Image (cartoon, rainbow, N blue to C red; front, side, top):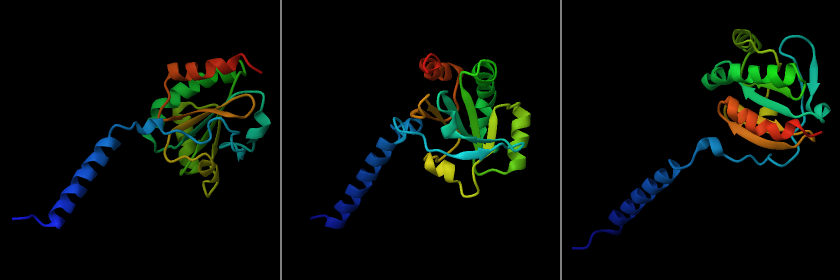
Length: 179
């Protein structure tokens, strides 16, 4: 007795889906490459979360930039909040070797300000615009996501997830002695 072609088609489909899922579990979602790496960082102008100060990214050429996309509701953002602030204090605030910028996405000004106060953030913080254009230009699909931009305004690295101290130091060290 021959089994129907439909039976075999269902089994082929099931085996194909199992193989596809198995392959998907081998991929690290934090290693998704960015098409921006090696290209000029998309320019933007943002207003400080507190106050009227504005920054235009293109005006920061000559100094490396750490651009962090975050949100007050993000658990991993809480993990890296003190790390980014300490990095800013060490290389931005005291020595002016870098500029650290944080852009809150899908957030409200009140919640973002409360988060900044809670974690003692002193670097430049802003909200994305109402339509999320900055996040869209950078291809953000989650938070936190961080970009390292060199002295010339070129994106040299993208990190998905919370940064740790060692990785921050490793990625920025080559940029500290240029320019």
